[in-house]
Image 1 (tube, one colour):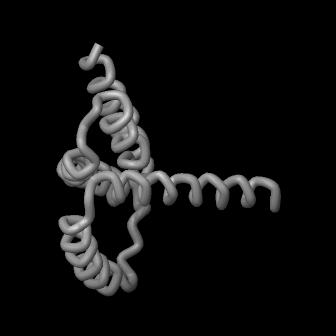
Image 2: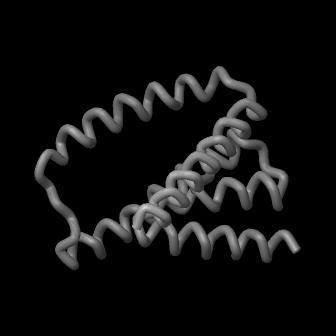
Length: 120
């Protein structure tokens, strides 16, 4: 049964990652809820899988002309800085706190998207 969830996790995160929507949004809950992985381990697996998926997705999006390089340096520069800060902060937090924060983040995203639908 675990292999089913491994395949599901790879499929879902690959599709969403390829669309540029963040496969970890579904990969992390699949790993933590259905496969009982620790939150920190799930986040690490997500980051590693993201690197591989991002390389292929980036190539395809670039080839199709969907990459805008204007101000890209600043996005990368501050993204790296805050990624490092986030990783350091994460190392001091217990997994349970990270799980709750991630759940709250997903709920917030759901509310924002729900509001957007009704504004249109």
